[in-house]
Length: 411
Ligand SMILES: Cc1cc2nc3c(=O)[nH]c(=O)nc-3n(C[C@H](O)[C@H](O)[C@H](O)COP(=O)(O)OP(=O)(O)OC[C@H]3O[C@@H](n4cnc5c(N)ncnc54)[C@H](O)[C@@H]3O)c2cc1C
Image (cartoon, rainbow, N blue to C red; front, side, top):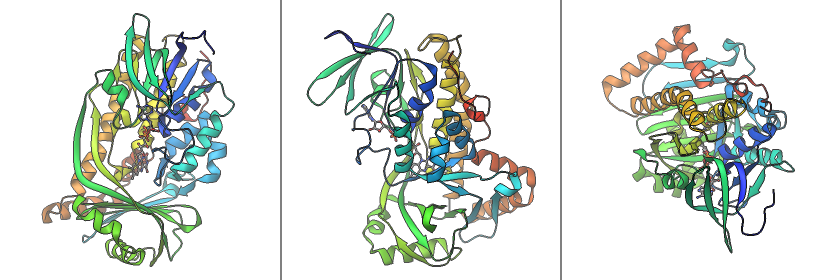
């Protein structure tokens, strides 16, 4: 891959952003034989890399199939916790619904994994592979040439040019690549902030996940290893500092009050982190020789745990196109087909997540009863429960080989 001095390096595909989505794409591309480079602003594996922080991720069953197709699931499965049931309730109102893996005749509805653990297995899969890892380096400019893009990278002590046929923006919510390629984004702040921590309850969680809607926003508790639960507790922005500054005991007490005693008493908490929440939706998923994936394309409220799952389906679709002879990387045909294939799934998930946030964050008396009635209805009507379960499991997009858990092969 080395080139003569001062001559730009050339790659078929350049991925900017080595977070959960960019690194997953790099792993997925390994069997296809393209020359691929992956760039990140932080050294790979460094504690500060923002994608691999204190959050845990609920991978849908569909996403576990995608990782299976990529060949990383065998290793990753030792670090995940199966979700066998999801219990959805609305504080202060009757009505709850339970989604269960047994009803779906599947081993799990999904799996919980700490983002650092996921990062470890993704980078393990990239070690000693043909993928070129470039870090720390940031993109500073992009020039469109007649037959390629030329990307300028700033490294610690120098700048460097790289040419590519296809540029993939996997550089997160504030994507610099999107901006440099003239892409625009609709941003709708939710006036909510998620406080994330791992907490330990007295009772065994028995692989149950809980989604509880409160007047301030939703609380999600998801089962982790060692009987810990990953907490995502939505707050009004003005209450965040107060909750972050509470002593551990006072924090657990406040959580107890909001969540109740379904898991007994909460006895321990880990470090707390805060994430301000907004819906970010890129107007287009493509630009000249460029595809936007993951948070660079859309950033969602974590209430339904869909962000990474959607990003993995972006990857499954992109790799599906790159695995056929019909499309050359970065061609107009390829970009158009990608955009057409991804918009329906993306729009459905954005609408579903956004509606959940708005419906369940509204404290009106009338809506409270409507929600309670809705939850009871979903619980009693198998067809409705099935629709909700299949949405949560990421089953509504099984057209790609990776989506079916199958490996992709060289075009
Ligand atoms: C509290 C919380 C809980 C969540 N829970 C779930 C869940 O249960 N299930 C789920 O599916 N999703 C969940 N999500 C969403 C999920 O975390 C994101 O969708 C996912 O992390 C997006 O990954 P990404 O790689 O696209 O972006 P990021 O994680 O933002 O990674 C972007 C990468 O790009 C690099 N970068 C940025 N700018 C540049 C540049 N100019 N040059 C080079 N590199 C650059 C960064 O260093 C970083 O490594 C949750 C989100 C939050 C906040």
